[in-house]
Image 1 (tube, helix red, strand yellow):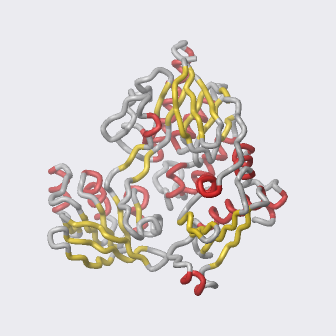
Image 2: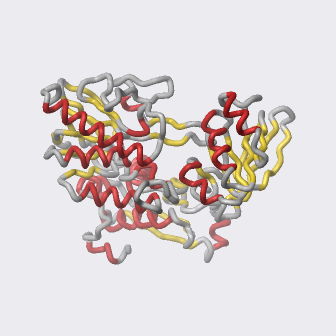
Image 3: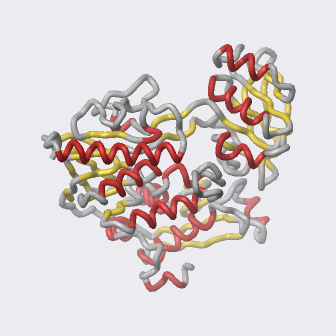
Length: 427
């Protein structure tokens, strides 16, 4: 792929704005990526860095197969793939895209003075490229409006989902396949797909909503639809990041069926954790709930239900210390009894982290009303507390965080925004 794209015309090349940022990187930059041929995240990272080499002659990139070069891997103390070193210093581990890697290189090496860009104007700006954002953009474009999607990556959190079997009419797909389908559908309309952009500032200037991104670009429109989604709260313990998608999961509805007949743990004793345990008990041979506090926090009716299940065990006052794996998948975890501080290894096949979601709303919290969890408050049609600003999907206070629901919310919000436009309530 690197050789085929060497003419600069490959289908994976970034747009002009990202290309300029890559060319502005100050060199020389010598990159080394340690990879495994069985790694699902390695190709994205390796290809992103290969593309940078083609665009900037000051960059060199070497890819090292860890299985073949075991002595070097041990010397560099590499314990996960992909791992990227820049002139001998580790700068990246795990999944990543060209936007993530570019930002890290800009921080380390700097860039030539960036040129100024004229603010681009649209009828509708969509912040976020996940299911809700894609649906909002498509429904808006179908009304003949000038639409731009500003996102770090199309698909958003969907990209991290291994299997999806509850998207009605699609019996089975993967997160990456769905993300590509969303991108293809967006491309079928006159929508500007502004990918690999990290929004740094959101503001209201008169009737215009303005988004500014890292690198100097900015965009404005009378209508802003916020669909930046949410991220699962993580345990932030060793091994967790490495095994996401390979034994560490966050959605029992999406990933539970892949653990049929296996032993799993649920981390978290609130409503979401206990509900997950109840759901998984019908699929898995054994479910163990670990709660950090002294008692479960779930509603009484849920606690009664989960305690009635014969294949569910519950441990309270227990801390997850480390996720253990064999290099390919999770094989267990280290747990600590907080009363005695005693640690022990607990063998299992999968870990479902259920300690809540964090809405990606930080950039907008000074613009629109949010609840105590940071979710953007909306009416039944996606309108926020500010005229001309709408929100859809997991970033909002909707009850259920599911792909199919996010799509519907995105479509509904776009229709509400168009209705307000026709009434003359927004520009």
